[in-house]
Amino acid sequence: MNPARHLTAGQRIETVCETYGSRPPARITWILGNKILQYSRETYAEDGNYSSSVLEFIPTPENNASLLVCKAENHRLPNSSLEDNKPLVQLSVANSAQKRKTLSLKEESALKIDCVINANPLITDMLWFFNEKPLSFGLFDVKLQQ
Image 1 (spheres, rainbow, N blue to C red):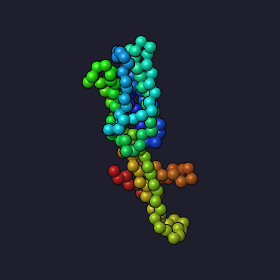
Image 2: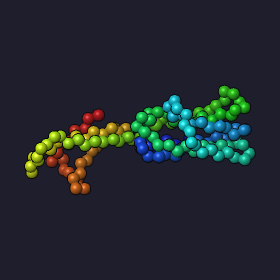
Image 3: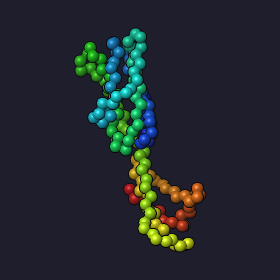
Image 4: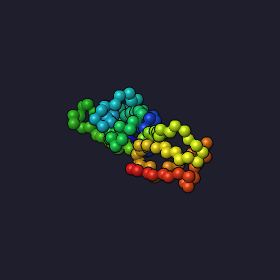
């Protein structure tokens, strides 16, 4: 299987699994967690010595820490399957800014905005912007809670 890379929930990825030395060509199956994935593209060499499978899918936050398994089997050799797997760890960001009930806001009044972020890996820094300009730390209080 091609090397693991950073994945982002909601963004399509493409990963490849290749096998060599199986005659007839190995049948490749993709498994995510305990679910068999469909819709991969297979390629086989004319001499039957090589096969590959390209899987395209869109990871979700629920896939976090799941194993993506590439399983190769030769139907003529029972119990001869080989597997390669990669743990899926993706950045899955979902944020929501929630305004507290405020009937009116006067200049220089305090305003509290909560921003809830679900991310993996955990965030280490957060910036706030107003009119596309970063706010300075003296103007507001930032609390990172894991």
